[in-house]
Image (cartoon, rainbow, N blue to C red; front, top):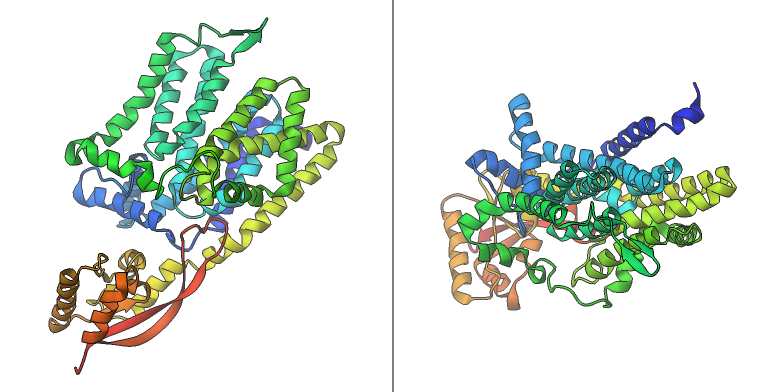
Length: 501
């Protein structure tokens, strides 16, 4: 077998990237849904089957995700009789993550015409610690990235073939992306620049009129808009357009909106990127920029830098930034790092391969403790099972975010106390707890179930009316902002008993 020829065969590379990316996610598959967003999406998909009509998840609804996962869920339901969409959501996440890696290879091949650069960029995305960590459990990031890169790839094909068909397909794919994560609409901008590829001659900007014309622009815009309109139409008709706008309002979804080009989140956002690609990767990205400049490929350099900047300065300066929000910046960085490696590859092939392997190994070593821990122990699920083991079947549990997992995995009813500090609401809640106990239903509470209590009025009222008995504790994990770090802690379970009973 000619291994050198095989390693340069695009078909072999595509199959290898696909299988590798799926396999590593299967090996380190999270032990449960882990994140509230994952629970909310899976539960919404199940409600589509229960109600027989379209349902939307939290915040902006993510209808593309709901329908895509539902297709796999309904097949799983018919074949195995399962009523939970968890397995279907895992499968969709793994597939779209792996296909995103393949698409990055194909896109990079289109713009660089080089197998080594393309394969290196794809591997850098596949093993990026943040992207790897958030695609070992169900989440919308991989799905949105898949449709974004698919739309971009189809747009590049349309640019080569002057094809209206591929232009329409590209728009439809970008529309599905918007129906997953609306803010990812920023992906359209760099791909549009690659599509038009204007040239400068005698200080004049020259555009290809076969591409840059009103017909093409309208066709693309209509194709992109039609899918989100159809996906969100049931929401608009049932709840009203104003409700939709309030839910997708960036100031609501990001807890404060955009803080400007430079803010207190600028440096933490950069450090998240640096920590995932390491300083070696950042240095190689700089080398890749120099490589494009020396090769007089300044337009491609401009597009990649613009691609990074538009996402970094907008997303990286939101009032609330989790590391996973920055995934759109990983695409241009991965390509630039691969170009830097190519600069070395031209001089010494073995040195470039060794540096690539060292970089990939370093990146995986960052992700390994996180994904290995969560593979063996998914905190939110394990605590929910602990509650199930230590409470009667008909009991209710006062809880906050953990309550959703307690309902999903522990089959216990979740209740929550008033969070507004209103005395009348608190008195009504205390009476509700007494009614449960009078009817023979036992009442329990998690430690975090006492949280979000202005002036601790609820705690005082509970202590006045009930004895709070400690049942036990179990390790859980806080999922917020946990893309790059583990956040385990011991969560407690209590039982509420009427005083003097």
